[in-house]
Each structure stands twice: as structure tokens, then as C-alpha cells.
Length: 295
Ligand code: UTP
Image 1 (cartoon, rainbow, N blue to C red):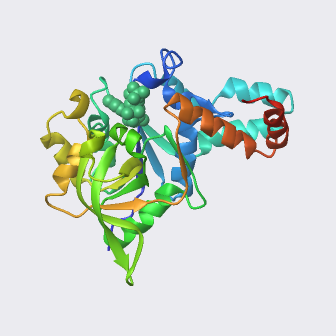
Image 2: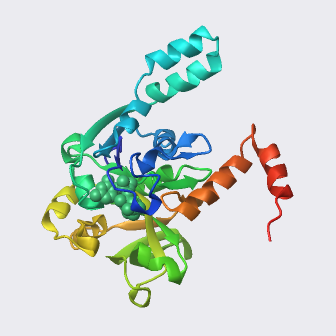
């Protein structure tokens, strides 16, 4: 029987250079889409997928992430004194949401390195990895979709998405063969190879790895073994490629819409679409957009 996945690691120690100057003195993960920080979308997705413990990998200048998920006595007291009970419970829900621990990555040496920092807290269990700048809107939470595959195969599973050729070199890209189900191809792939940020001409497919993973603890030894790769960073994709030598890895073309909120255009798209879907804002915002003279 496969071990239950209880923990998810949230690497949040990157420098967020694509979002400068906003990220000069504040973490990218705390940028709000409408009114909620990016990382809270990811934490809620993990929670709704059945994850019980979150491990956030932070770095210098990231203390507002810890404050966000901590109790804010002064704020709660102030809101209570003004009888804003809905707001008190909304604020309290954030700190009560789920068990969160923190570990530091002192230098941003890459995503693989950030995941390795969680080794002691993860222990010898399978675990999820969530990159919170990828916001995924879906009926079934994306992590839950990956967990369903993990629970069947007991092997690592990566979230995959088709990406246009002119954008493919920004991603880890897989060479993968479809897993047939009763003679039909479903959304599942068995991965043959993968490469981090290939040139468009060298990309093995149009299937890119998106920021959700279910991993097994053997990944830590793989990360420890590999050398720095693309951009001089310890890349998680390189560690996964190393892992492929000894065990199968699956990829799932998840159902849902992904927004790259770590990128300015992706962030704007997420903001507009999430605002349009809000009960309290959507109608007015739609009217406003209709009246904009966009050429
Ligand atoms: P990104 O590739 O988005 O890098 O990292 P970044 O540094 O955050 O942002 P840009 O590209 O400079 O704008 C993907 C995820 O991995 C984390 C980031 O915080 C983000 O969640 N990460 C990356 C780390 O935790 N440590 C690292 O050394 C690198």
C-alpha cells in the first residue's frame, strides 16, 4: 500500500526578479490577487486536497509570510471592538487554517536546493511540492488530481501543461509517452526524459512541468547528487531526471486553468479573471471593463 501524503513543501525563497520593483522589499508570494496573497491560494488548494502539514521554505525578507499565517491579536481585538465579526473570523481562519512550519534557504541556489532544505521536516514520507506563483483554478484541486495518480501508482507525479513553442524555453519540458486506459489515451503520461529550460528547437515536446509535484523521499538523495544546471542553480528537474534512472515518474495533464502569477502579464490575467468571478465584485467590475474604450 502506498504511504499517505500528509505534507506539502512550499518553496518561497526565490528572489522574484520578474516582478521587480514590487518584489524588492516584499515577497512575491505575498502579492495579492484581488485580496488574497498568492501563497494563500496554494495553501488552500493543499488543504482542500487533504494535506495536513505545510512546510514553507523562506529566505531573507520573507517574514511577512510567517506573519500572515500567524495570529494577529491587535487586529482581531480592533475588529472585535468594532463588532466586525465576519472579518474577525476571516482573519482567524487564516491562522487556524493548517499546521505550518518554516525552514530557511539562506541563499537562492535554485528550486532543487530549496526543496532539499525541507528534508529534515519531511522525513521519510512522500510529499507534495507547491510553487505558489502558479495559481490553478480547477474544480478538483490540482494537488488532489496528482494525489489520485500517486495513490494508484505509488510513484512521483508531476503536473503537466501544453505550452506554445515560443514560450517553452521558460519551463522544464518532458519527453513522455501516454498511458493508455482501455485503449484510450487519458491525461496521464509516463515520463521518459526531461530537460530544464531547453531552446525551443531542442524541446522534446510541448508538455511543460507546472508548479505542482508529488515526490517520494528518494528525491533528496538525487538533489544531493546532481550538479548545478541551468542558470547555475540546483534544479529540481535535473534531480527528477536523475531519479528516472531508478524509478518511474508520471505526469498528469491536469484539468484546470493555470496562471503564472509570478509574471506581470500572468498576474494581471489572474487578477481580472478572479475579480470577474467574485460575487461581491464581479458585476460591477464587468460593467467597468465594458465601459473601458479598449482598442
Ligand atoms: P522562480 O523560477 O519563479 O524564481 O521559482 P523566482 O526567483 O521566485 O522568481 P524570478 O524568476 O526571479 O522572477 C519558482 C519557485 O521556487 C522558489 C520560488 O520562491 C518560487 O516559488 N525558489 C526558487 C526558491 O524557493 N529558492 C530558489 O533558490 C529558487
